Length: 194
View 1 (spheres, rainbow, N blue to C red):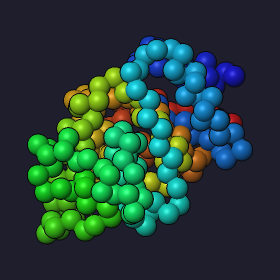
View 2: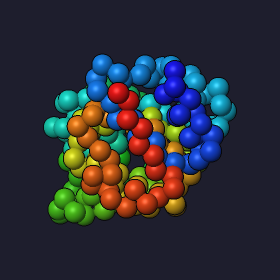
View 3: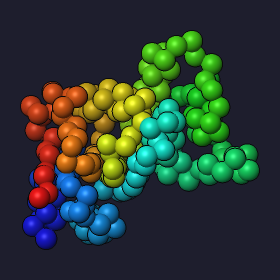
């Protein structure tokens, strides 16, 4: 119960931040309980929950595929893809990269760096239009590397967004290992459960 106190206290004092929960598998808190406790605070207009999974590592940008699907309630079923409406992305995604991502189609960009930069710009814009949102990411250590690269850029530009992150990951992972600058930011906290 002390864990919930720390998370709730941090969210109340720094509602726009990145809270990382580092824990062994046997101490992982129930996500539904965490979300319910956070909803009671009425700090955020929206809480989006995404769980990373082992297969995610083999599908580039799969984290963002799940995130877009959750935000816009898109189906990822291949049989129902034509039911998704991508008009909202017309102004920020003229190359239909989001539509291709949801449909698991290849992008026509020349190289991985251009693709990463294009996705970064799209997701930076997307996150700017959903202010006062908490994105809760479970099992973050299982995220695909391409999404992780984009998220690193987004975390470096955290001040441009009004989105908060609550991230859980295994005891063998640390978000600030790859993003040393987070350690000096007042909005970043890592809580270790033992």
